[in-house]
Structure formats: C-alpha cells, structure tokens
Length: 213
Image (tube, rainbow, N blue to C red; front, side, top):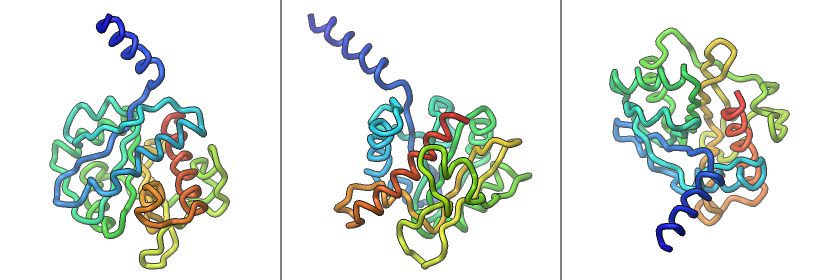
C-alpha cells in the first residue's frame, strides 16, 4: 500500500510540475545565496497567475555542471565578486546557445564583476540595453517605461541589458532595480504590496519570455 501511495504521489508531482528552475551557485566569494525567498515566491506567483507548472522548490546548480541543461531558466544574484573558470564559461555558453535562459539580477554591487566575467562566456558580444518596447516588458503584464524601479540604491534609473543569439534574448541583466528584493517575503524589506506586485509581475514576464522564446 505504501509503495502504491508513493507511486501515486510521484506521478502526481510529475504531472503537476513539468519544469524546474535553479539558482546559480557561482565562485568568487559573492553571496549567490542572497534573497533565499525570492525565487520560491516568484514561482508561486507565476503558477497562480500565468498558468505555469513549475516545481515550487528551486534547485541550486553550478555553472560548470552539466546539470544546468535540465533547467529552462536560471536565476543569478548577489552583491559582490563573481568568477567563472574556463569550464564554467564554456558550459554557460553552450547552455545559452542550446536554448537556456539566464537572468542576472544585481542585488547592488555586482555589475563590475559580472560584466567582466560575461566576456569569458561571450567574448564577441556586448550587453545591449533593451528598449522599453521590447516584448519582455509586455508579454504578460505591461510596463510602458520598461524595467520597474523596486529599490533605490544609488537613485539611478533601472536598466535592463541583454545578450542576444541572433534575435533571441538568452541573457537578461537587470540593474538598479533589484527585482529579487521585491520578490522576497514582505517582512524582509518592508516593501508595500504595490511595489512587490510590480516586481512579481516583471518577474512573471521574464519567466514567460524565457519559456516561450
């Protein structure tokens, strides 16, 4: 009886949750583990509002591990240093070329490190700022001004940069916005419901874009 019950639970899980997301555990000493409630909350929001069926518990994956190819979407965040080895860079490149999507959300202070390391992944490409009319800002919820501002930091305007393979956006780098803080449990940053909703809607757009393009 226990075996049958276990099989039913397993089959129900496979049927209900067809996709998994992951957080990137990178080297260099940066706090890749920051915002621990962010991605689980975003997954819950997406499953409830844009009809995704994502496993509610995100996994952790390292950039040089071939397990990375199991995930259609990988989220990366932190405040400090990032380092990709040659193997990390090659594996990430192959992952993105083969259809994967990487969202890098600067949690403040990450930009100088990640922009340098991305040159190892795509030495021939530049980060390109996305215009406000890009599909990612309207695919599920409409953001006429582009990337929303969630936390002030330096008070600069929020910016979304991308790396494209032909016309497909494969990597999104969000800066001066801090979407992940807006996805976290409300008591962590004391953001208003309006601010959190804005962050979650933009996150849902990113997920939907990654799954459909």
